[in-house]
Image (cartoon, rainbow, N blue to C red; front, top):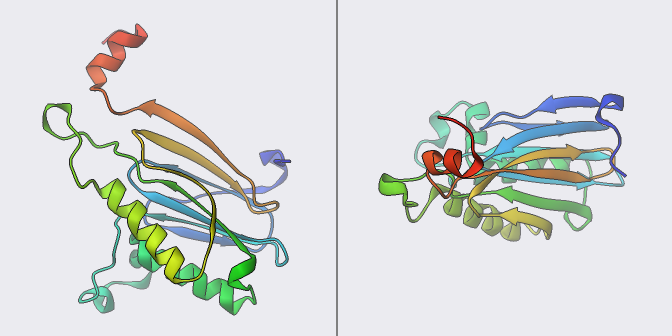
Length: 182
């Protein structure tokens, strides 16, 4: 059962950040085209969430980037969290991984979605790197045209998500359809 959020610490993870919790914590984030990946180990009672903005860390410039800014990249964030879980004694086979986001929420000209979208590229990168690192994804909500509000409880591994307004139609159409004034 999802513990009431008032009973545990809460942390908000911004785009390009990650957080690893060693005690029960609700980690929250808001996703659009970014990808959020949760990692949870029941035996060690640790959990982490990363909020990657771009699919791949450029290898030619990664040495010049400050370490904290590398979490903007889906591939780097996943590999670094995997390394931290390894150092804490977690076996990859006992880590529950869930992946969210990667939506087509940024409309191009004339209300059309751009292809390939950064959201789609983020999803592909996350799934590729997780597979290469030996993780099995047990749940996901990827792509689509809505943003997601994520609440990850590291005390029990449960993730709650709430879909935001559909971004596939222009904002002016959404206002008229819902009856809200301009």
